[in-house]
Image (cartoon, rainbow, N blue to C red; front, side, top):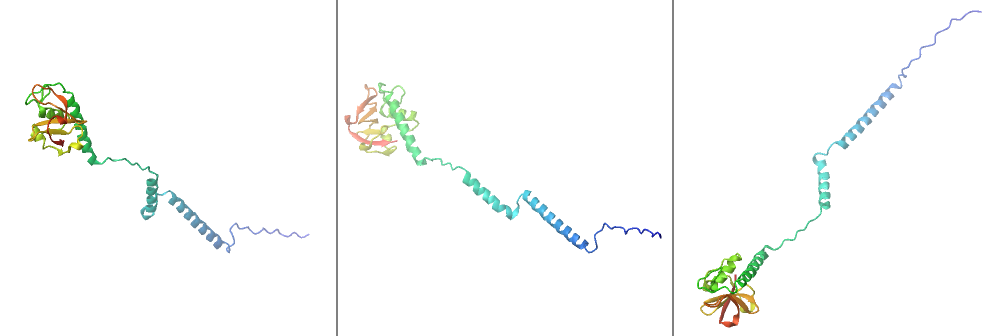
Amino acid sequence: MPIHPVSNPAPTSTSPAPSTQPHLRAYATRAAVVATTAAAAALLTVLPATGAAAAPATSAAAAASLQAAPVVRTPVAPVAAAAPTAALSARTTAVRLALSKIGSPYRWGGTGPSSFDCSGLVTWAFAQAGVDVPRTSRAQSRAGTPVSRADLQPGDLVFFYSPVRHVGIYIGNGQMVHSSRAGKPVAIASLDGRPFHSARRV
């Protein structure tokens, strides 16, 4: 039997057919583009916004902060009310101090703290309350603002005779505290005990 030589099989190539290589390259290019785009998008999510893009976010954050912040309203007293309140307190203090001197002797020219004439009692009581008033009854009758007898309040100064030569401190209910004359100590008296002239509020 004749022996036929064995032919070696043709070597198998692992490379793709030349007709498929362009398709693989196109696929690889698209995959690289997609990967690059995805990486860029991921990077943008972690980077802080800048320029014009940051403005809307900043404005929105500021608006949200303002809406969330509590509104605190502090009442403010009118400044103009402070002066009358302080003056009223001073007049009240002056009345209290003058009443504390009931029984102290009269002394012409006396300004306290142990003896007084009429205007000296007024000067001393108001000075202790932090208010400076003139020394004599006639000068005191021109200090402060005028007050009618019907509108008297405790602490108002009340004057007598014409021309003025006596003063007391009104304490309410038609009465005053005063130092009247020699031999009579500081006392409470009615406004009707002598000719009323005028009143002032200091």
